[in-house]
Structures are given as C-alpha cells and as structure tokens.
Image 1 (cartoon, one colour):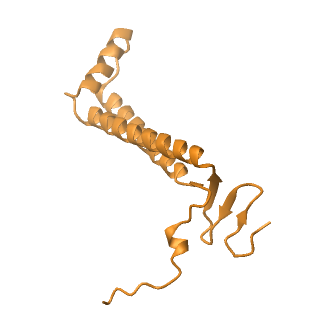
Image 2: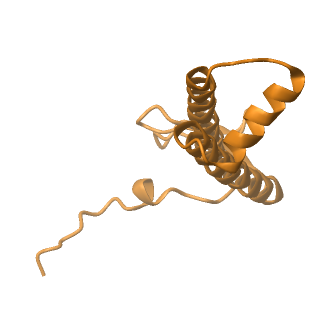
Image 3: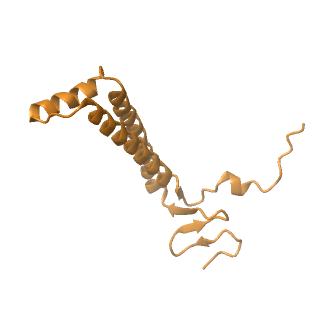
Length: 129
C-alpha cells in the first residue's frame, strides 16, 4: 500500500518510512501540537531536574542534597555520603536520558501535509556565489 513515489507512505497505518529507515507517524494537527508541546515540556523538565540532581551529587552544599540527607536521617537510614552521591548521579543521568528519549520520540510525529525539508529539497545548493 505504498503511494508509488518511493517514500513508503502507508495510508492505512498513517506512518511513512523514509529512505534512511526512520518512521514518522502522521497525525491530525491538534494531536501533533499536543505531542510537540508535552514532549518538549517533559524533556526540558527532565533535563533541568537531572542537572539539579547532578549538582546535588557533586556538591555537598546543595539544597537538594541536603534534603535527601535530611530525609534519610528522618527515616533512620544511615547511608555514606559517597553512596548517596553515586545514586544521585546515576538517577540524574537516567532522568536526563529519559528526557532525551521523550523528545526524540516526540520528533517522530508530524501533521498531515507537513514535509521534511531534507526530502523536499531535491535540487543541489550552490554555495559558491
């Protein structure tokens, strides 16, 4: 069920396979806007929070690091500072990676009628003047 122009547009499933193997999902404009806004928001929040966790892992004077130490002390758990720093650093990298993954998946969506500039520009550009 391809459209015959080599792009692999599948009208039944609403997805397209480009020549590089990337699959795009064609959705209505309202869903496209929703996915774009929320994937970008989640990605930004995850990256900022991840860097806050990295800061807490590397600096003993950070607010978040102090809050984690206070919460562990309140529960009665005695944990070495090196273990807390290591766990915070691993969680921070995981949160940053999760945000990057959400953003990457969000870029796979496009609205009907939207083309990609790489595929639309078939002519060679002449940058020599």
